[in-house]
Length: 370
Image (tube, rainbow, N blue to C red):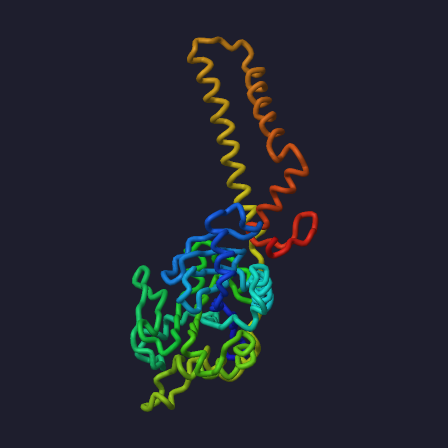
């Protein structure tokens, strides 16, 4: 079974902290007070983190910071999972450093400290069959758990609620989540590229490591983690795994096939999938907006006619009346960005910048920050 095992490994989330000097804090704060100063491609965002008052977003890089002189570190950075899978963790890190340099941070690579990193292993199998079955045993030191069920079926479980020893583990139905949570469809293409089928279950085991855990390995930077990846991965499999209850002594029990495969064969670096599903989302949005536009046009013409007839006016040539109304619409189109190739290209470029596209339709390079 191990030979045919389908496993997809990924770095799912990366978070850093860095301490900004006072001048950089004030520089970023000026943007929050005057949004017109913010360079193209960077957008203010609600923070959502109590310790950090302000937030900025550039593509999938979210930067949260405080104007406090006492809080250290005063800046927290998070890469979204979609961004990591789209550009790869190496490029994501390089772009983050470039962004910080544009803010005035000197040698950001030295100041960025790894705060959290999540490692994900996706299996083409239903791991829920093991979790509440007396024939199997989850080996872990994490005591507190929380679960979620749908239609009496387990779909998600977290180990490590509260005091987590510096790490947590989640085991859940990733295929179900990708269907039910908006914006998770990009995983479908990643799985297909790895040989998965979307007609069978896809379950994930996700190890979430925090600063306390990373300190035990003397890990400060992302490069330190990548250099120690295989050793850390082996340790994680010891800390949390699923075993068969085939011995009286749990320590001597054999692992279920999925984990036996990981322990024996899974020693390759984490993959950089570089899957971009934004074109599909653009097309879907365009189709939806086109339907809305046609409905709005029909409504506008019909309402105009209703107003015309309500005044007891008679229209002798209905076809001519409709052409006149459509002519008025065409005039509005000509006055919009669609009426000028130059204005149209600028509008497309602005959208791509907002969504994190790094090249204009004319293939001109866009700087990370102006």
